[in-house]
Length: 407
Image (cartoon, rainbow, N blue to C red; front, side, top):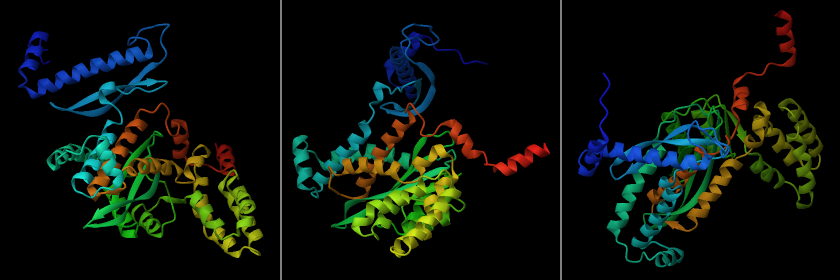
């Protein structure tokens, strides 16, 4: 039997009493949905299902996002539009990352471990009278949000995964030490990018990377076909151990730097041009053939460069086994490097983090906001059609002709 609908006067009365938490949350949700519907109508130029000459875009379903309010967490169905994107004004994008940066500055200040740069920021923001209890309160609100994001379940498959690290100065036991901040991003079967995880540790050795990758698998990471990263030996070993069965693509940008470091300065530009002819080939077989030709040509005068090419052949050409439309993004860690630059831009404001938790708070908040922006992006990272080609095994031409003859 259907539950009778509450009349409007009773509903408003319940809200004004501020005693029924469920009713309050439902009221906030209803009002928020109405506000978003009004904003989307103005954005697309037409009401839902309305035919209008003023229409500039169309509604394209919704995505669910949790919204933390004073009456509890409310699940909102945020409308999506096509073409373009929509983000509700009431959620204020980027607010969480800026708040995280502010708390790190505050925490550094109240613990007396800030740099001159942080001291100047604190005075400029008018925060020099802030107390430790106030900082603890703000951090207590942010940390659970970031931790929930870092530990959330990964509920789909991720054929492509990028891994990279950047370094931050962190005060630990009274000493300032360099800590590795590792980040993983992936692409779903629908071609959309997501932040998979982030962690901070003492080094990039095999044990640290293995623990990080195992934490991703424990949270649901599956279906990985290609991992793109730099050639850290510990990371490569960890990938082979934890993501057994996935191919590994060595970052081509980093490889070229390593290769040209073995070449005299005057020869680097022409050698780089010659090596790039390998990557210009249309498929893996022709690229591998060209690589051997280039290595043979270099062996007499540049034996070290030739050996490096031969040894890394399969690692730098792994992306050639995947759809052509994807290869430009698969041959290097550049997609993650750009994200690391944004992290560095924000973290440089701090200089030295007061502790590891503060590092995770700021970096995690930045990544959470980036994940939100990717979720509402107008275009997918890879098209659905190209992802279908990834999932369809390629049949060689000769085999295809044989199958057609049999049929």
